[in-house]
Length: 118
Image: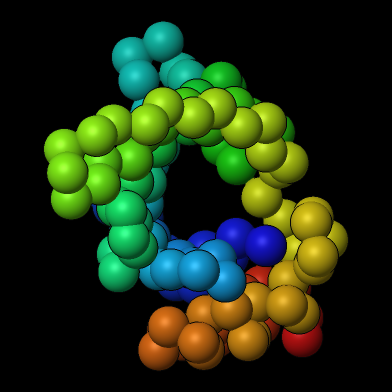
C-alpha cells in the first residue's frame, strides 16, 4: 500500500510526501504542455534508494505504469517497472491503511483522513 500522506498544489505542480510500508518518499507531479500528468517519486530512507517516473496521461492519479531504478552502495543499478492502480480512497488496501503507513514514517495522514471521510 502506497499512501500520499500530504500534498500541496502550486502553479508549478503538485508536491507530496508519502510512504509505503518500507520507506517514505517525495513526489512531484507536473502537467505537460499536451495536458498529460507525469510524477517523479524519490525514496527517503530506503536502501537501496530508488527513483520512479509515473505517466498518468490526462487523468492525474489514474492507473499508471511506474518505471524506475535503484542504486546500491556498490554502484549497481537495477531497473524496474510496475503496473499500479489509480490513487483513491478505495484503491489498493484502502485509505484507512494509510494511518499506520504514514505514521510509521512520522508523516501526518490528516489530508487523507479528511478527503476520504475517515
